Length: 56
Figure 1 (spheres, rainbow, N blue to C red):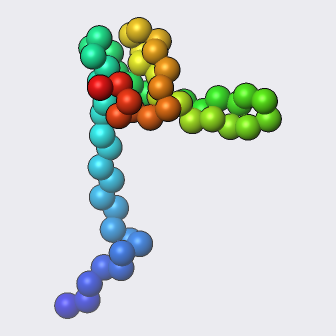
Figure 2: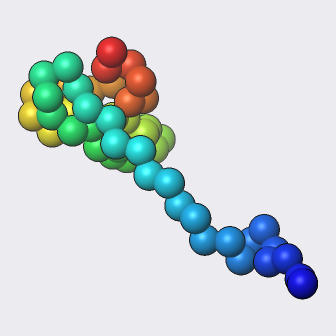
């Protein structure tokens, strides 16, 4: 029996991050001084960090 190619496999795992205040963390792209910056922002307390793991 033939195996499915690695590109045809469609398993996507999404991970949700939560701030210490209880809000959910969302990734956003900001355009500042001619560059695109990806930042993580808490929806509840509006705190900004470089990546979701920095909220711990």
